[in-house]
Length: 461
Image 1 (cartoon, one colour):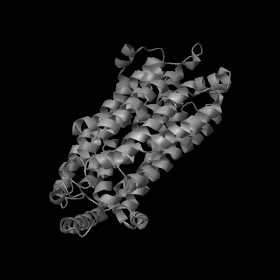
Image 2 (spheres, one colour; image 1 turned 135 degrees about the vertical axis):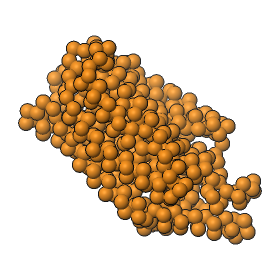
Image 3 (spheres, rainbow, N blue to C red; image 1 turned 60 degrees about the vertical axis):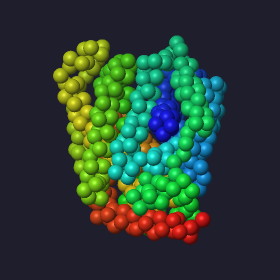
Image 4 (cartoon, rainbow, N blue to C red; image 1 turned 90 degrees about the vertical axis):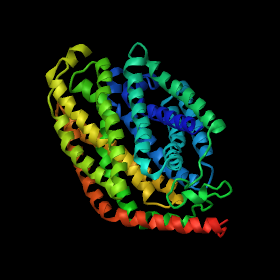
């Protein structure tokens, strides 16, 4: 039953992230379909959809904090399932929408409900697997977001591509994602078994193994003050700056390949799959390494993040500035092009390192906080993570447009390189965290030991 619950949670997250990936690439066709713009006008005003995507991300982020607080107080599977049902209905409604304002409203509803997904999923998973395996588990769960992005890109470019003769094709992916998510949310509601809170913590495991004892501590408003007082939390939250470059790259990668590397739409769709292999390998490998090093030194997961950040900041500008031209090539010809393979080999290594950060970051968030505030802590950190991505899209879009106005033929490439500065800044956020994390983990362990004694003696109801 545990495996089945995990499968449902993972696939619900996949379809959540698919929804996020199918809006921006269809900007032109959405504006032509809903507003009646001409091709040229839709291309020049594609920022309307990019801005909507930013509103989506900020709405999801804002409500993530609300859901994080709720899942520290109430049954988590209900929060996850009801959020999934709400998201599904918003996504299905998008298929039928007839106006741009209607699209804005439905996307905001979808975003508000999607905000329940990440903090609740991580909170549930942290109570299903041992502390020593958290980074691996979170790494595997993190693949769901990657598969969602890949599936979204495949739907847009290969499976259901919109064009001037079929403007409404952009709607179908929303309907498919909505229907599948609705089924999964109902299955979670009917079949998932929620684990006991804190049952995998070293100092709580024994007492919580007794059927009659539950971890009865729940978050209080005053506990939220502790989120910022904890030094590790501060640096984990402020690390949102390293998401600014990633948010913009993910939103514009297909457009970059099509406009500046002259790839055809179908070739661009295939090409995004190649770095995805590096993403998957990096997520799993560095999750494994984080767990292994953590058992030797509680700073191990943070050390992995520092290494991955340094390598990412070095490799990204090398990858985006490496020249290759795919003009007139089909996919077979692309695969025989040496210049392409050199560039994408660098991209592969970049994604391999860059995606080692996520699972170890989430594990460190869990390690450094008491059981009853973990959902809230994940939600606060996720909020700033989403804000970082949204800021990256806005700032990157402004830089890109200024470069275009000034006649640049490589505006995406230059923008990617400039945004690397924010990734480099993120490195300096990890150094003080490396100094503080052992003390904060020790504090949580001592607190768990004290609470285990209270629960055993019946002092805490």
